[in-house]
Image (cartoon, rainbow, N blue to C red; front, side):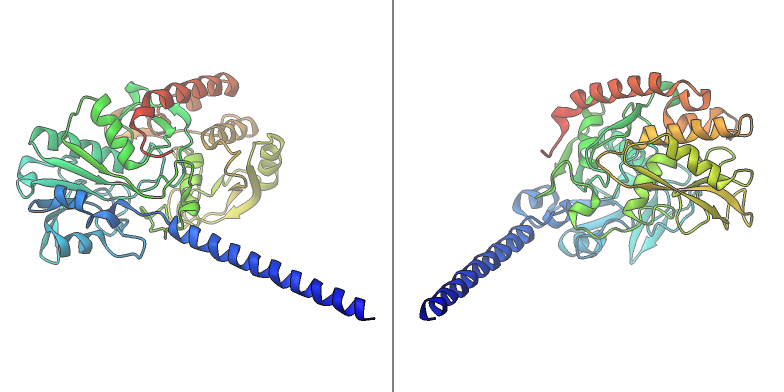
Length: 414
């Protein structure tokens, strides 16, 4: 009996020791995770090396509502309390991200600071605009997809600052889609303001890396400095950073939406609805003449890696089908490591054309410009021309491989 009691006591002591060890390990893991928190470029502006770039200068700030730190403090407020903030420069959608896509807006003022529109009479900073400043600071969140205008505005800023001898300091931010590169590299004949340079559709670059790349490779040669993030790894998607998401534009309300935008963002340039005017923009694909169950089955049969589809009906509040019931599917990225976003969008379009031959149409660019919107978004005409997927994908994969080698020396994170 005594032996049994002693054995029981030994077991209890051993168990409590293991639990203590595990608890210590959990505490250590927690401390390591806390220590590894991603530090944004804007959160480094008080550091000595960054202060040397900003102190004593009249600063311009290219930003919008996404310019916040990890505690949601405005970059405008952070900079103006520490330095001389002389002007704010804002892209499409305005300072608060409230202006609808494609709508111009004029200069204004924010708490005594001039707010200068880069989506008004001109999309380029003028000599008069830049006379307000010595150094342009950039702090704005991109979505990781080429057909988005913030990169183009940054390119024009770099060009203007090179021309008028102004320095540019980019405070880096994550690419919400990580560093994967997918889809076609833009062909020069399809260059527009929504995509200026030959980079992949899913480009895999942070805004700082993009600035470094085009500044050298496109011969801009601006006086450029990039303040990197700390504790950021190239493979991180937005969720892995632990940072709060601020909608980058009215139709990208969540980080998840950026994934869907890469898939369906080109498909809405015709008579398909991609959910614009619903609570989940870019999550849907359909049209009033479609049958939801039929579309779902056809897409399920394609067995697209990492993708899933739900038969859906929805009624947009805006767009060509406002107030009409649209049938199709809701698109899901079930495995972000396996999904090829650009290729999935291409297969979705091809499948719908097979199901409804002759019924899908494409919008022309408008404004007296030749060509089609889907071509300018995708960066080539293959989707509209319905070229064989495997032939196209083989070329895309080679293009992204070649680009990844070319851009490697401008990457900031491992």
